[in-house]
Length: 173
Image 1: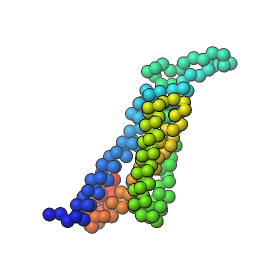
Image 2: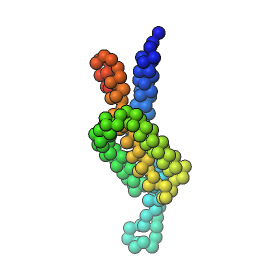
Image 3: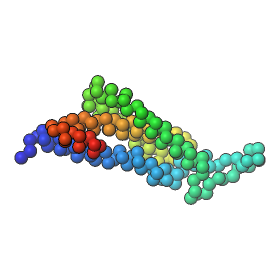
Image 4: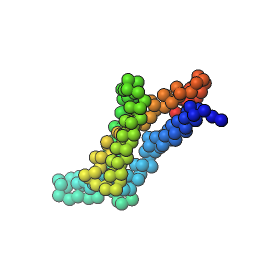
C-alpha cells in the first residue's frame, strides 16, 4: 500500500506530465495555429491594399479566400515572435517563485492560462480588425504561463527523494 505522501507525489508527477504535453503543444504547435487563424480571417483586413501606382484610387484584393496574403502572415508571425522573446523573463519568474513560493506560481500560472485562453477564444469567435490585437496578450499570457510551468516543474523534481529521481523528473520536463 502506498503512503499518502507517495500517492501525492505520483499524482503531482502525472499532472505535471500532462501539463508539459499541453504547453508543448501551445508553443510548438504554432504552425497549425497560424493556419487556423489565417483561415479564420484574423488580420485578413490587411489583405486589401492599395494597388501600387494608383495613388490610392483603386484597391485590389491581394489574397484570395484560400491563400493568405503576405501582410496577414507577417502580422501573425509577429505575434508569436513577440511572445517567444518574452521567454527570457524566466529569471524574473524564477525569483518570484523562489521568494513567494510555488503556490504563488501555480495561482499566477492559472490566471495567465485562463486570461490567454479567454483572449484567444474572443479572437477566434469574433475575428476582425477590432479583436485581432487581442492575439498579442493571448499568446503573451500563454508564454508566461508556459515559462512559469517550466520553473514549477523543477520544484516538482525536488519532491522526489533520490537524486536520480530528481534528475529524471527535471529532464522529462
